[in-house]
Amino acid sequence: MLLKRLKGWELPERAVTSESVFHNRRALLKGLAAGPMILSATALAGCSDEASAEADAAKQLAAVPPDPSSHLYPVKRNPAYADGGPNRPITDPDYATSYNNFYEFGSHKDISRAAQALKIRPWTVTLDGDVAKPKTIDIDDLLDQMPLEERVYRHRCVEAWSMVVPWSGFPLSALVKLAEPLSSAKYIRMETFMDPETAKGQKQHWYPWPYIEGLTIEEAMNDLAFIATGIYGKPMPRQNGAPLRLAVPWKYGFKSTKSIVRFTFTSERPVSFWEELQDSEYGFWANVNPEVPHARWSQASERPLGGGNDRIPTLLYNGYAEQVAGLYKGMEGERLFT
Image 1 (tube, rainbow, N blue to C red):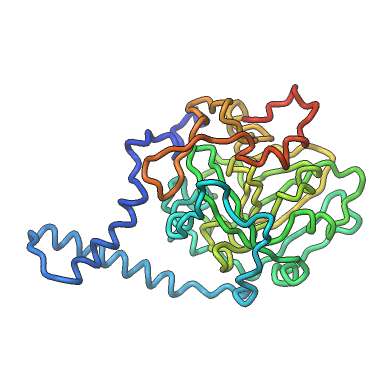
Image 2: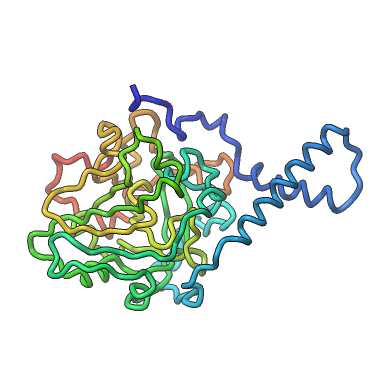
């Protein structure tokens, strides 16, 4: 049955190459160039192949057009969100920008090279549904209208890895106000781009493309809800969801949909991408709770990127309970944590 097929994250951790090993490849190559080493002919051939691959990757990155919004960054950091909390340093950008989920480009983590094919201009954002006046806005016009700032947020993946990232962007509430939703609007349905010729993963027909996610209006108006347009003081890299993505740090990462093209205001609760695929494991709310395990693994701890295999305890609502727990009072009948 297709829904039970092995997903990318279902590998046991012992089978996953650690980030430190992945990045140490480049240190090894530098060492080879720095001085003589006695190697077999086979080993030399292998290093030559990898050096060639690195060179090809560098050429591909150099060919990617620059982001037209580069002049907007860096932006001022919001002091209310200045760090990741006690003992949570900001994740090294090499990890956060190379270990990514983006199923449009593949079901593995090493999709950063493939994601460079994403065309981020022209790019428009549509606000429609139950709004005063539907509108479509060019991404650069939208950025000019929004109050850009930087926020450091913790990010917790449902796969039990985590990172601490300085996002640039604007409060989702600012976009809601721009849309002028009607009183009938109870939810926001967010839709990602659809371009199977560019994003080969979208040719996999067993997935319900395009990627859909949703929030309630109350969640969207919470101060934590954020539209991220940049990271580490620069425009958003393609593999991280350029040119704009959602960041809701109290929820599992699959809620933070990437490369959004449409925000639809509606009276009906959206059915999200993963919920449609396997609703017994991935619900609408997806709030972080260490006491509620995933159907196939514990959520009690997490592995910070860059920390090897060291694990730390996971916090309720990913440590943001004070800001968001009130959103869910009186909802005991809902599956808030799956």
